[in-house]
Image 1: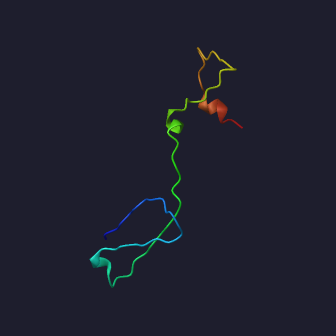
Image 2: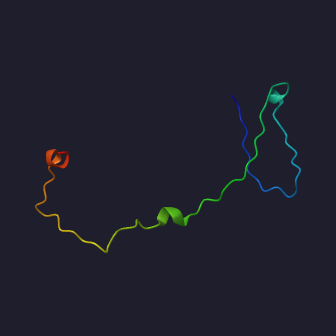
Image 3: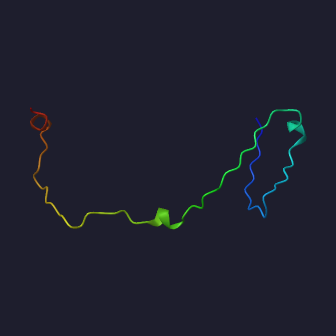
Length: 70
């Protein structure tokens, strides 16, 4: 299946679409939607950490059986 994708900024509300010759006589779908701009800074954001609480878990052992007791 061949497809064509083109992203552009229209200057008015009419678009002229030129399709390949092998599309003629076939059922085709034309789809238009707004492309959202990706923020470059979103990837560089720092991970949020909780600095207000610090716990010392040295020597702590998790007991699954005790945690699941009813």
